[in-house]
Image (cartoon, rainbow over all chains, first blue to last red):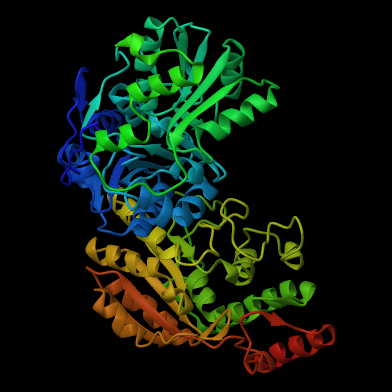
Length: 332
Length: 280
């Protein structure tokens, strides 16, 4: 893996070998307000970097930038919701869940406030190191009572969630994919459904259970593995809470081995909730867990970091091939 | 839509009687337990009297009336004062007051949104109320509503950084439908204020607010502050209220550790008598 450079702030990662859509969140939020006319978007000095300016330009009187003040971002949103508005907030997940945790929990979730937090830079989607990489955000938010937690995979899903979030009761924490976002799911046929996992393929040797952009990588890895004689299927769990326990148990029961994959530490995120669900269903399967190690990650270029920490399609494929004892080279 | 008393029929005798009744309602709650945040509540009896019986618009039949003013009490642990006034305006039955702080009573030691009519926010984790009030002020303005937003905060709460984030936002967005009341009672959990916070009035002015400083136990000055808040435009407004914890009962006023008052069982009769004597 050649070494690269940390991207400048706001520089967009290029998307290779796959169609992409620019700023799908903004498109969804605009569509939502055209339909509902009750959405107010707030950001905390990260408007440009969370794709909200198209919304601001379309609905200038429905936009507030509170400055670098995540606690104000969340409490002001909570106040707007108490006067009948649907408040969409954006900042980076690291700041939302670390700095403003008490405010998301008490000012929002405790009273069921209609606040939807869209949190950028999830996991290793930024090269700005431990301060900016939200690698434990799903764990922090999942543990808050009455909080809905979503980790979308691609542009199609991101746009649909932005369009539908107002219909979800209470407070929502959703990871935000910004900039040029790959299109993995066909917008003509894919439908995001809260709390419902989606199965792709019917291979039974390996069952990938994944969330966020790791589903893209698992789908690619499954194609490579097929050429090596390993039949795999993928279960995409965009909703971390409420979790589709039955869907996951049914899926796991239908495959020989399970691989979980998340753009998050292996503490408290997808892998943990999958293990809970399988234990409750008395299902025990050999399992490989793919995720970010329990440490703060350094700065670096995004492809470099994702490769180093095993989150690319190639690394997923190789990890599974190693685990199974088959030769990864066969796929090349 | 009330207030129960309009400016045209302003009666200080009536407001004084209401403040007295609020204190009685607080004693009824604390007597059941022998302890509580009684000092803070007693110190705000005049404020709650003027707010609920003179200034705030609300519907005695419908706590959720769309065109009501909003009141956010950021210091949730002052719930004893809020229960006193919500009982007085009929949102909760008075015979519920002795259950304050008892298991399974909705009258909790700290306010929880959604459990008692008239509670607009979950207080207690300090530093939340002002930001929520700013959001509500923006939300009402966006709707073209004439309703106003009142929020109570405290001197100790100014130690929370989130207060100043909200203060900055309120000024930036020119929330002139927002009136904040700062209860400066000089106490916090560890005793007298543990870090200096003065000069509070200058701090709020520096943050772009209009500021009015009063004796928070003076009905006349509170009514004057309400008139001032109606008249000024363009900026959020802060009424700095100097209050005395335990106000109205000499034996409690004299206590140094008035943050969380414990009262011996045989003291309650004495305290009740003192309250009636001082208001005779």
